[in-house]
Image (cartoon, rainbow, N blue to C red; front, side):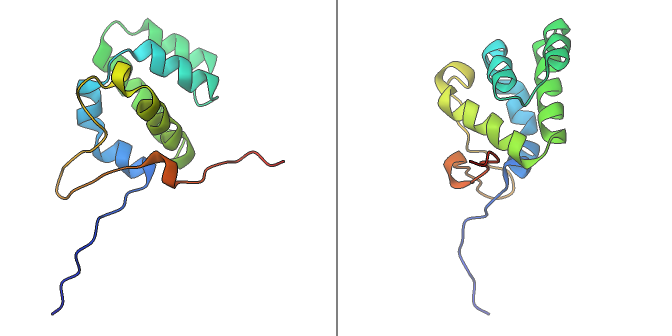
Length: 118
C-alpha cells in the first residue's frame, strides 16, 4: 500500500462549519464584521438589526455564522475574506488555521467567487 501525503482542502462553508466553535469563542469587534458583511450584501438590514439586538457576544457570533452558512459557499468566502483582511482587529492573536482531526488551512484568495458579470 502506498500512502499519499497531501493537505486536506476545505470549501469555505466546510471551513466555517469545522471552525465554528473556535470562531464563536475568538471573534472580536463584531460590529466591524457585521458592517462588512452588510456592505458586501451578505447580510440584510433586518439581520443586522437582529444581531445588534443580541446582548451576548456569543449569541451575536452564532447568528452571524448561522446566517452566513445558510447562504452557502460564496457568503462563507466573503466572511473569511473579511476576517483575513481585518484579522488584527477581529481575530486578535488567533489565526485562520484550525486544527481538528487533520491539519486545515484556508487561503481565501484561492477561490474565484466573482458572480458579477461585465
